[in-house]
Figure 1: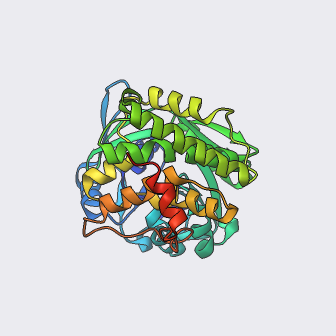
Figure 2: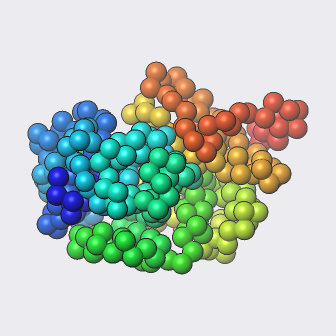
Figure 3: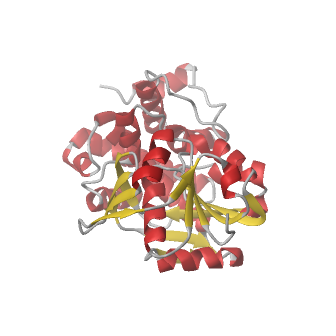
Length: 333
């Protein structure tokens, strides 16, 4: 494989969105994944992308499950689910050039650490994206919202940044990327679990008073944990921000709800679970987030495909103490 190509690790909604837009802009792109139905559809039919203005395009991209077929790649964008991070890292271990860099734009907390354990911290870069996409079928994706890609100041990423800008992505270079990661984590923790549990779009949360109140509580709890971690969130009021995001993405089907509908594992451990873990370490009570975390886990445990996330939150267990139960019970009618 030509080492100037960009490797997209993953074959879901965002992976297809990034691959299609990069390829359509003339960037050499390859995809590395493990979902056979998607890889087969991409190889046989290409990626069918519906843009924000309703335009449909079919873009041909090379896709494979074999790291040996994409040897020597210098730039990789990791867009798999958080519970797939370790597998993605092991795939990249076989194909990422020694001087290469893997950029994670994944949801949740702990993905960079998992990738770094296998690839080395110097070969992993952290980023945040607010782009949205909905997977309609394998290799069929609809862009659900425009957004920003935020990256740290890393000179090695310059060629990749140029490719992304060539494809029309909006980028910004940030000095305090950890704050942006936590900023997105707070929003995801407040919106995604509730939409997954209730089976509704983001905007419908604003139309249901009880759901709206729970969304507010989750955002407040997550923001308190961020503050305890020494993180200054990129907004002053978490409730105001989560309301704004829910309104701005009103028609969006959250990625967690998409996972539940497909019977696939969710990223709840790397979102609510990670915050609960950090809260416990800091001695902070997060009863709303704890309840949402366990309810989503219970929702997906009925599927044979369920597999808990690995890495930063893999040792988390429900609090069996009377105090822990009391905190959760206080949220129930």
